[in-house]
Amino acid sequence: MKVHEYQAKEIFKKYGIPTPKEKMCQRVDEVIAASAELGLPCVIKAQVHVGGRGKAGGIKIAKTEQEVKEYAKQILSMEIKGLPVKKVLVSEAIAIASEAYLGIINDRTAKKTVMMACKEGGVEIEEVARKKPESIFKVYADPLVGLLPHKARQIGLFLYDDPKIAFACADITSKLYKMFIEMDSSLAEINPLVVTNSGELIALDAKINFDDNGLQRHPEIEAMRDRESEDENELMARECDLSYVKLDGNIGCVVNGAGLAMATMDLVKHFGGEPANFLDIGGSSSPQKVKNALEILLRDKNVQVIFFNIFGGITRCDDVANGILEAKKELNIKQPIVARLTGTNEDKAMEILKEAGLIFAESMDDGAKKAIELLK
Image (tube, rainbow, N blue to C red; front, side, top):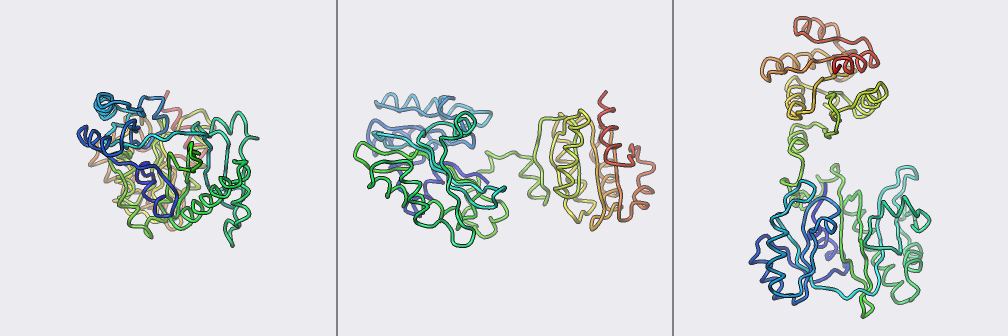
């Protein structure tokens, strides 16, 4: 789950991470009032769940009242990468002496959280990692004792020569780590972390992503969810207890189990096809769940073929078959369906579906090949 910049900064403040004076606004008159309160010049920043706001014109520095009004109208009426801007953050303008990057993620290979720092801030860290990986300094936290103070100081001393600023950075680093762990985050970034002309450190921008699996422990974070900024089908899938991610292909995949779902997508790609989605119906699927999965799948107009790849353990193949049958009766499915159903009650499933007009596959390879052939 993602939150907007203004929400991330609210969380930063709770952990003592310094941020600029700011106000979130949804109307032009609110922006005008906020700019009067904060003073000119001020910065008006679009609040959307995508990067590249500055390049798209979603971040403007307003130096006059007229510019405040013009930029507010402009930004609140624009779309950035397909997402309409409905909120802006009005911030005091900061005199910047230097910019840096500070972030934390989970390193799955090392099985540890890793703090990352770079002396180049305000730029896309992915580009820096690709072009100049040696410029990113990494410090790993111990899974048992956390981020030790001397590790946080290493980050500060890497970024800054001035000991006072370096130790202030170490303090921010420790607080960012504490927040990351306590809030079940999957990513936290300050980009840029700036030194002002007066020598203060301020988190000028903030980004936090949260692990969906931990949200049950944080209802206050769940309440921050901006449903209008999320994919409608992914929201529907979550409400139906399904795991769904839309992709760019045309072969809709319905699978039980995340590992099998990944293997199925890999197989489709291996034989020259393009999966339209990741869709995991889970380990215990009722017919209704299968029907819901197909309903979500069919909302993607790119789907031309549907490939069911079910390995029945806890999942009963006859439940899946009944779900397919109900969906065919109610959803007007025009796309051909390739089905590989094996495992618990597979014989019953074949009996249920024998008159349903499906194309049966004997193996995963066979199913993927048949799905791709149908596209031709």
